[in-house]
Image (cartoon, rainbow, N blue to C red):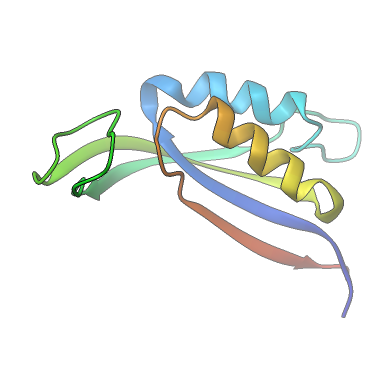
Length: 107
C-alpha cells in the first residue's frame, strides 16, 4: 500500500510545548483539510541520565533526571519530513530530540 503522510511524535518539556507546536504548524505540518496547526498532545514524564560529553539543558551529568513533558503528535506530508525534523531540532530545547515517525496508509 502507498502512503503520502506520516505521523510524527515528539516529546518536549511542557513549558516549551506551545512554541514548538507553533513552529511545527508554521512549516505546514499538521494540516488536515482546510485546518492548519492540527496536533494532539498528552502529558507524561521523560526520564534520562546525561552521560559524559553531553551538555544537558536540564539535569546534571551522571544523575538520573525526570521531566514533565508533552507528547505532541501531528500529520506531515512524507515529502516534508526532513524539513520539519530539521526545524524542530533547531527550535527544541534538548540537545538530543526523541521522535517517533509512523507511515499512514492511504486507504
